[in-house]
Image (cartoon, rainbow, N blue to C red):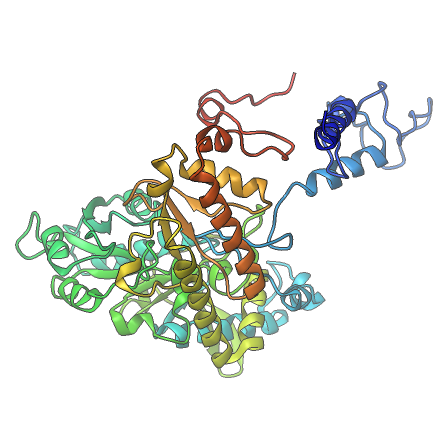
Length: 511
């Protein structure tokens, strides 16, 4: 037995003994740590004495009976499994995982912001309202759209608010026959879902082989059932689109839609590529939502409140959800339906995502207008650097057209010839310590891999990712590549799962 094989055998035996290897912890369920029928902290209730709290005894809640150190170690160990932007590089296209500057967190934790109560009198929340008002102004300046509503609590919520605002505008004009929303076949899935939720029929716009919309295809969809397009309420288009490309025919498309009486809803998911470079209103946008986590660094996910403000033209501003923040003299005020009776209504009760507003405005103020422009330029530069570095190793379907925007698209076309798929390469990236990029989206091509580096990644970090991807491409060309890649990952607490079986027959309860 070679020395290398002996080391591997020793490592495997060690792992079999206790589940751990090199401080990489295996962790069981908390219930499996029970060693007795009582916890390690609580004392038994004394007999004959009433509880001083006046509450009835808690009784058996079905919780695992473990000590405080056991519980603490359990959750700390599990937290090390959660890959985050603080661990390393995220090549995660379509949902930018941006660095969250610690300055933003510090400001959001100031007592005057963190300890607000939703039912405080407005006179005691003037500082918070002033912050929201300034954020509205920044968003208006960057988009060229004067009407701003901060109420939506996520990007998809913003889409809902935007389409409902369009719906309200048509209703107030007596145009209830407009029951169609146009979406490209490369659209984010939330676009047709939002339109359907609002009761619209969704009509597809076909994209060309170059990944972009054409005026001809748009006209075909617009006038499909009505020669004047009078049944179309609007279109939902992401620009730059999900293929990482700026829609070159967007101006004539927007003009044609406006001529037919529809509104242009722009999905702001990719606004990170445009800030400081171009205002969406200048290419015809009427309504747009902005994901503050994608563009302005607020935390993404985690179960907490997000923020997806919407920006609209002056014409549509009166139909926005309430409340927006208005300034009367030196005082700030949250509107009500009585202040703006044409509003589409109220989306939710309070401003629970206010902490996201604090973080986003902090990010804007710390960068300034010129800094935000550089953020976009750096993000686009990083994506193009990756595109040109890897276009020889992977199929890059749109590389010949010129530069991409802030995300580069590849497919598994070359690797598929040797039995290696996009999923296999994603699992290989996990083995190399990277979170995979977005896979199998957009759906306009098979086996897609959407790579979106952020502006905060150093050249060294991006070069390391490129080196790993080149190594994966080289491995995929070897004779036994299919067998090798199907075994990835090796070093994770769990190996590759049967994802189809897990989705169809989930085990939801531990026995």
